Amino acid sequence: MADHPKSFFLSPEVHTYLVEHGTPPDDEQRGLIEETATLGDISIMQVAPEQGALMTMLTRLVGARRAVEVGTFTGYSALCIARGLADGGTLVACDVSEEWTEVARRHWERAGVGDRIDLRIGPAIDTLRALPVDEPIDLAFIDADKPSYVGYYEELMTRLRPGGLILVDNVLWGGAVVDHSVTDENTKAIRGFNDHVAADDRVDVVMLPVSDGLTLARKR
Image (tube, rainbow, N blue to C red):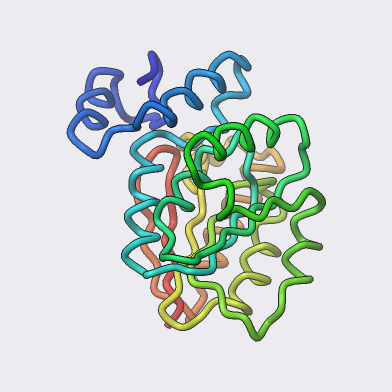
């Protein structure tokens, strides 16, 4: 699917094999991957195809009807979550970019999931704070600005139902989380977030080496 797999520990050959032996991206997903690739280096922000397939499966496994995404970009992850929603389900997708999400909207419509996605443009923390606390969330995905991860997580956790799931991307940060010579703001924020979740007794947690690291936090 790509010359350079997003997972920093996979060779291109192993990554191709891995994708081919799971549920592969369909034509619409491939079209979105290809269009996003034309944007240049920023395309790395798109989730990997195997991560998207996992997210669809997890959405189905928890029987999600109400989901929230923080950080939408060109819409691949939202498409994958929307496809896994139970009948009548809705995904609230939060982003600040009209430009990138315009690409997303086109592909959502072509994929037949446009009516399941409620895109909200604006600071995600404001969108999350405006969500009612008495309408439980079944599943959430965080993939946005790293210094705000803890804030997003806490707003979502307040609204997450028992047994609900929060997925968090980029938690290995290309391996920089264990390289103490790396001290930029994003790396320190990811380390702080990982420590925050590991110490949270409200959840059961597993960190998976999927793509750039994916944390699954299930509310007890």
